[in-house]
Each structure stands twice: as C-alpha cells, then as structure tokens.
Image 1: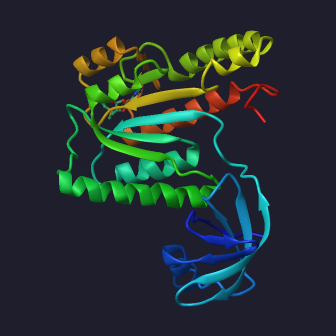
Image 2: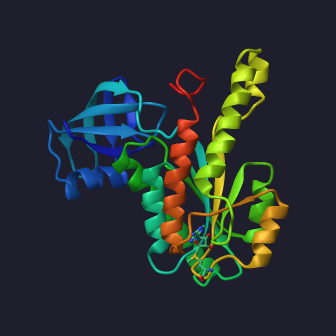
Length: 276
Ligand code: SAM
C-alpha cells in the first residue's frame, strides 16, 4: 500500500489514538483529501514511524488509530555535510531537495568571495524557513526519518574553522585527485583501522568517532578563488576533482554527494558496527 508520509513531531498520541493538527491536518484534509479508512505514516516524534489509519478528518484536526510502528529503512548510515555556496535563483532549492533524497545529513550554506546570491539579513531568515520546508518535504517523500539540518548563511572562513578536524574535501576543477579515488582510499583505511579496533574493547571502538563522516565544499557559479582553496587546504581540506569537465555548481554538488554516500555507506562492510 502506498501511504503519504508526514514529519509530524507535534502529533498527540495517547495509547493508539492520534490527533493531528496544524499544517499536516490541513494537508490531509484540503490538499490530499484523505478520508476515514485511508492510512498515513507519521514520524518525527521518536526513532519510529507509525502507520496510522484515519478515523475522522475534521476541520480542526484529523484523528486516527496507530496500526503498527516500524523502524525506518531509508535513514542514511553516514554523516555527510554538504557545505555549498549559496546559488542564484532556484538552484539552491534544487540542491537541497535532491541532496536530501541522496542522503545529506547537514547543509551548510556559505557566503564565499564570488557568491552573487547573498540576501540581506531580513530576507535570509525567510530563505532559511523556506529551505527547512524544502528538506522536510523531501524527507517525507523519500522515506527518511530525520530532516537534514540547514545552517547558514556562513562566511567561508568561520565555516572552515567549524569543520576543522573532520574529513573535508574541497571540490575544485583543478584538483589532481578524483573524489571517488580519495574517498575509496580513505574508506578502505578507515575500515582497516576499525577492524583492528573491533578486536579491542568497546572503549577503543567508541573513541574512533563517527563511522563514516565527511564534508564536501562546493563553490558558487564563479568557483572558489585560489586563496579560498589555499585557506581550505590550510585548514586540512583535500582538493578533489569530479573529472575534466566543468560542471555547474548544482550538478557538481549532487554528483559529489552521490559518490560520497556510495563510498561512505559502502565502507561500512557487512557485520561492522553501524552496518545493520
Ligand atoms: N571557476 C569555474 C569557472 O567559472 O570556469 C567553474 C566553477 S563551477 C561552475 C562551480 C563549482 O562547482 C566549483 O567551485 C567546484 O566546487 C564545482 N565543480 C565544477 N566542476 C568541477 C569539477 N570538474 N571537479 C570538481 N569540482 C567541480
């Protein structure tokens, strides 16, 4: 059965009875015109998703009964941050939506030297609200449990300081090494380290940190300046290429995300902690 999914942490649940109010209730009644007997999936309150049969669909609220709860199957098993320069028009919206579908856990929106799409403070607040709505709707659509965080709009240097110490890759047309190669070599090394550690105590295991985490830095339409690339490298980032063709920023962002999720999730070999 195909069921609409809603991120609805505010749904009130007493035993198996659920009351849904606000924007989700309006969507159920007015937009989707769901009726008593239809089933929906609610998530966002805890680590489960709840299959709910609608009993009454009223103007103020929808009421339903929980039929069962199930673990989500589509939650990404890696922690990928996409730190991208704000782009013009609807390109940022597009990257947020598709990046959520592909498995990004956090978006950092950056103001770089050549960013041309920088809104004033008042508009920036409205933009962030829109971005949060976009990632929430993409989360509902693609089967994930937690909407990715959206942070920003951050200047480049403070963003680099915040990311320092993690595995950071700066996507750059002139980089010598390919992103896929860098990630697979590093993932193989991380797997080998984990294999060593898992023979030891739990304390050692927990000290190795997130199993598969990385940050991708992607520039604006005009690219990063040489100085920005040098600053990122000074903060520990590795330059990474997506091949000889110059991609539009939003294409580069999504190609890099797809490669990174594949490499990071794939590095959690069968049977390792976190791979189930
Ligand atoms: N500076 C370039 C120019 O104007 O000719 C192009 C910038 S590109 C449109 C925007 C961003 O996409 C770059 O800053 C980089 O992060 C990423 N990008 C595009 N093509 C890439 C490639 N082949 N390898 C790595 N990154 C790429």
